[in-house]
Amino acid sequence: MEKEKQIFDKRNFYTDDDSGKVFIISLLAPILITLLFTLLYSGIAAAIGYDAEEATGSVWYNVLASLVSSLTFVGIYLIYNKMYKIDNRTVNFDFKMGWKNYLLAIAIGIIVLFALQPLISMFDRLWITLGYTINDLSIKNFGMFVLFIFVSAVTPAICEEIIFRGMILSGLRTKFNDIVSILLSAVMFALMHNSLQQFIYPFLLGLILGWLYLRTGSIIASILAHFANNFFVLLISYLQTTTGFSMLLPIEWWSVLLAIILAAVVFVIVFLFDRFVFKHQSKSKVERTPGRISLFLWVSIALAGLIFLFNLVAAFV
Image (cartoon, rainbow, N blue to C red; front, side, top):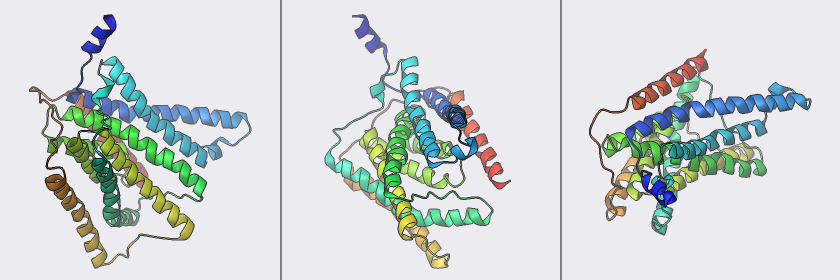
C-alpha cells in the first residue's frame, strides 16, 4: 500500500523551474566530473610510469572522457527525478510510434546533416580566417570508427535527448508556446557545447529535434534522428581520413548561394513533413501554468552564456 502511495505521489510533468535547474546541473556536473576523471586518469598514468600530459592527450583518454561526460546526463536524469519525485516515464519513451515515424526520424537526421553541411563548412572557414582554431575529428581506422559510433553517436544521442528534449523542452512548454520553447531549448543545447565551432549547427539541429519530439510525442524519434546525424558525421570523417574524400566546396559566390539554398530546403522539408506527413498526428499536449517564469531558467541561460563567452575569448587569446 505504501509503495502504491509513493508511485501515486510522483508527478508526471516537468516545469520551467525544472528546466532551469536541470540546465544548470547539466552545465556544471560534466565539467566537474570530467575534471575528477582527468585527475584520476593522470594519477593512474603517472603511477604506472606514463607521462600524465601524454596520457591525457591520447585517443583512449578522449574516448573515456566523452563517455563519462555523456553518462553524467543519465545520472542527472535519474537522480533529479528521484529527488523531486518525478516519474522516469515522464520522458516519453514511446516505442510504438509506428515504423513510418522510425524511418522518417532517421531520414530527417540524414537530410539535416547533408543539407546543412555546406553552410557549416562556410562558417568554419570564416572562424579560421578570424583566427579561431577548428578541431577536426580524425578517425584513422575501422576499429576506431566502430568505437566512436558508440561513444559519439549512440551515447550522446540517448543522453542529450533525455536532458534537452525530454526534460528541458518539456518543462519550458509549461510557460511558453511551442515555438518559443523549441527556440529556447535549441539555444540552451547550442550553449551546452561551449564552442563557437559547435554553436550554429547544434542550434539548427536542436530546432529540428525539438520539433520532431513534439510532433511525434516520443523521445525515441529525436534520439533516432540525433543518432543518424552523428553517425554520418563520423562516417564522413572516416572517409575523409582514409580516402581523401571531401565535401568541402570552394569559396565562390555560387557555393555560398548553394549553401544558403540547401539550408532553406531543410526547413521547407520540415514544413512539408509537418503539413502533410504528420497531419493526422497531434502534437504532444501540455498544460501551461500562469505565474512568473522561474529565476533558475534565466540564471542558467546567463551562466551558459558567460561560460560560452569565456571559452570564446580563451580560444582567440
